[in-house]
Length: 59
Image (cartoon, rainbow, N blue to C red; front, side, top):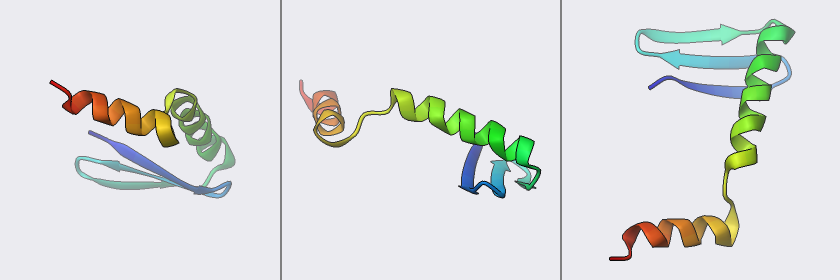
């Protein structure tokens, strides 16, 4: 699984199986900011997240 971290408008890193890539070009960083925003739209927070996690353990 590959992961990424957006630090700010100037830096994003991507970890791949063989190492880490650092992106400093604003267009590249912007791509990862957009990707993060997409994931954030689908994320659950607070009570909703706790409810979902609890549901996974109910039998």
